Image 1 (cartoon, rainbow, N blue to C red):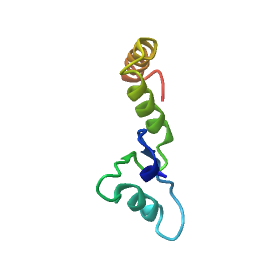
Image 2 (tube, rainbow, N blue to C red):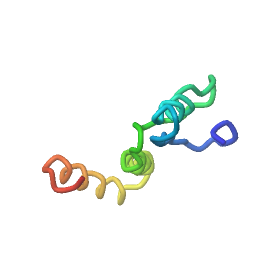
Image 3 (cartoon, rainbow, N blue to C red):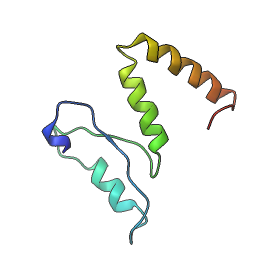
Length: 80
């Protein structure tokens, strides 16, 4: 699917299978030239969501403000 879109693609490899998720990780980071996929760690859907908001916040000030507040709370240990 990543090869068929001009939108940013975020890969979220999932732990499991005989290789403990390594196959899932490799399939998202080993994309061919011209097919970029931003990849987060195994089972890190939360980081994928934060990355998506960071991308969207480049053009949306309302998200930028919320993201700044979220990151401050993360730094203070209030959110996980």
